[in-house]
Length: 372
Length: 130
Image (cartoon, rainbow over all chains, first blue to last red; front, side):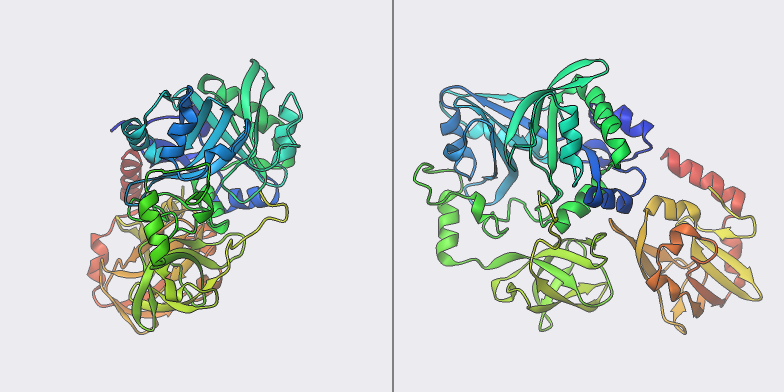
């Protein structure tokens, strides 16, 4: 299979990116090194190509009604320029994808979806959508560049033609970045996947290299470095953000993943949506398992699919784990039976046949001083 | 990338340095570069037995776990415990401070199956081309 390339592929090669396959895309896992890139994002700023993510547009008088039926959050609460996190669920309540919903206008919304799920999502959306709405795959035409870290807002502001620092978290605004090759229409979104402040900048695919160069030119002197998927993963894990295929899949519900805040079960303006009945039943019955944060108390790093034990018996499973570059400790996310989910509970992780002690800890593992 | 002439190499990217009847074992420059920054090492105890081509430990980057394969059979007579505190030495000095274990080999002829520096360099080139 030929891997797909983002419009920034050439940049990754010339910057020395180490390319790997991710969700059918040829993407940089790192440039200088995961830990250095991670630290740059926590202390200065990092720039990520996230153009592999998908964008799906919804336009027409039935756009809001369609979105209300497809995704779990209450999109009626959105106003122009607002962003909202949500999930797409099967009738079973299992997660098809986790997404962000953007409102451009009362009849104009779009989803940003995971790269690895983009094709599946689009097919699922087209199958389940109804009413007077046009669904459009905007993925190929749209590039997305994330600039994250304490210095990121200032850097992106200096690239922008208008004030954007007043944008609160989860708001966006259209604007222009003046590049060497000319002016580029972009969307500045105060969102991200690192736990840091910063922006995600969407632009037409063909203009992505110019915008990338401009941001690096402005940010370079302040310590802005390119960062790959490796650092993106360790950053999101420290911030306890879910990654599809790890914390989320079609056999996991958003309630189990502690995403109840993005599921509008009782919102008066929301009504029915796909998966609602199953999620209501699960809520009424009580959750059998919950996503928790673990910190290892013994030597070893918990990894995806390692068993979590309590009293020598199977209590759950690890979904993501690493040695936290910021904290210097081995941390993990995983599902445990509800009785073991309380902060402070002592459990163990089975690592290569050994029981290594661990503890359920408060999350996020890391909170930025100026959080994103 | 450096592959010293006095070492023997495996297809799993370990090196072996025979000296005074014993064999020091480590991972190659190519291995450490491919794995990225190493943050955790698990090694056998002194006195344990290792078998050629069997796993004897792991090294881990922030991203992944990789098994270590013994280039020779024998008993472990020394372990580089400094790596537990400073696994980054595997990256900075893979043929020196980043050594893993010393083995008292049960059959030194096993070393003859290994690649020399030139053969290993060719092997790495072929692997890079995939």
